[in-house]
Amino acid sequence: MTTATAKTARRAVAAHRWAGFPARLCAAVALASVGAHLWMGWEHRAMPWESALMVLMAAACLPCAVSVWRRGHDRGVRLLFGMSLLMVAVHAVLLLAPGSLAGHGGMAMGSMATGPTASMGAGGPMSGSVPQSASMLGIIALELAVAMAAAWIMRRSRGCPAHTSGQG
Image (cartoon, rainbow, N blue to C red; front, top):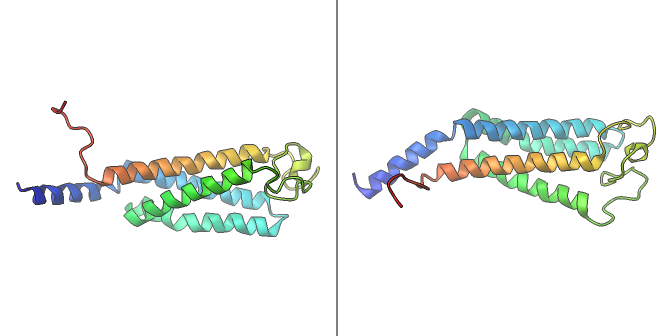
């Protein structure tokens, strides 16, 4: 078998692997992230622009997650990888930036205080819920999991023998 034929065969095997376990795992974690963003959109329903932003983020992720689940498309995996890293960066800035939207009496998305005032006051739609900093860390963890799964898929799709037996 020639080198060109071997490379073509490896690429065909790698393309077949897209529909396997890693692709389904990546899609499942991305779908969990979509669900979390929809839940946050519901929790922020008193603030329409924040709610719409959460629904938009979920809507941007959903087509790629479904595509990866069904067919394991290369483009969908790459988009999930990029979007998840972008979301990690955005959520980290919202969580860690000094004074990032905090100090507005709990009326802004970035308010990271805990307790009833952070949830728009007692009896508000988010009262008694998980503190926003914990929710933000949960979303960051979900997005990192999506990025890791997508990176795993992209690595497997290269067809490069990372470790072969018999070599030292």
